[in-house]
Length: 524
Image 1 (tube, rainbow, N blue to C red):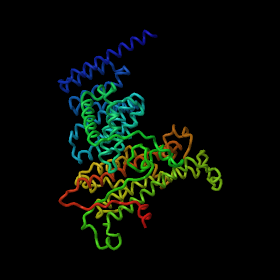
Image 2: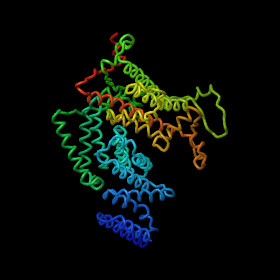
Image 3: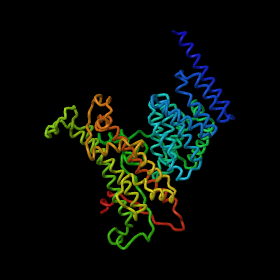
Image 4: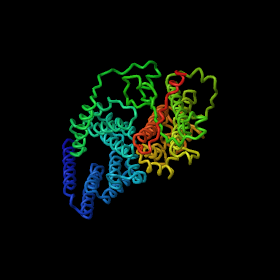
């Protein structure tokens, strides 16, 4: 048996050596020569498992290096055929890489907003990267997923994706370095600046330069980029004399505050930092801007002189915060309260399928619906503020309308692009389409919480599988929605802040800083 294994390993090594030689020598080869060589390999190694799972990776490497769309498209075609019968993480990762490379070649190094909006490859690549679950390729898949999000201005979500990669492999250099760079961008975009982020960014990039796999995965260009960023951070830290002393996290004042901290569901810019009171509060502090001529006589008489679009924007924003905090507290209650006695009051009827209803599950479903509905309100807020003249019935999907694309291009805002791209993810075949389906079932039909889904797992009945969720999966969906809603609000507030900074000085509008209601009532 050992001899058999030795022979097999020797054959694998020979195949990989031959493939690597082919990759090196193909730099000046024509497409015809490359395809002929691939056909030769296929005929020789068609029954070899390692060759089956890895050959497209070589084709993708050659296509990316040679900037060859034909080769990359060929790799995608082969992988689509293989994935039909072999749904494995390595194949998902490879096809994601191929699509990412095609997307990069199509949009170029300085893409226009229209190019990003219309690019299908990036969207499909993210879908495949999300399907990767094995420990070997997860760090790279989640890093690439985050890299695509960054292209669309989805900075907060990108950082969360880098966190997933680092969780899978704390020593994965590309995730460490890219998160460090993403945090500096987060710092620059946010209205509320936390200098600790700059120090943390430096720490991450420094570590990325120390681990061996960074140059192996990212090449010398990644090393050069990280060194350049590290130098600029050192200059910034010295110039601004940033030196934040060590402080322990604050101890939460209640179980509810502890729950919010553990789930990272406070609405603020503090990125998992709880060393001061701001980290344990909801506070975005948006700054609206407007021209003096925007104020009408009605605004002066009824709204204290606040322009109508800003007055109603504040009202909608308040409703969003109220809905978010209510959904959060309901979610908390669902996880800590005992509803058995209360459930005895209500009679639920059995459909002989062992599904259960309870107030606890009702709380979870209500939290989900409230969070999802906030996305529609965010879309309404955006239309109210940016294009109040064309407000109709606004759902989150309305951010896919041509009028909104024009708003993005006119204002040249990556934050507004981020919201459009996020809305795309809720469409059919999108990353979050399953959340859309759950919302529709909850609103118009039903969802059962069933702890044992074994009875449904082997059925092809789509209605059953979509109408039944485990409590664990429901909570996972709710946590996803908290991240999504928080991300969307960050992008909107960042768009306001960016607009304020980039305003033409020759036609300078006035800024309206929105005070909290506490301030108003305390000083009444």
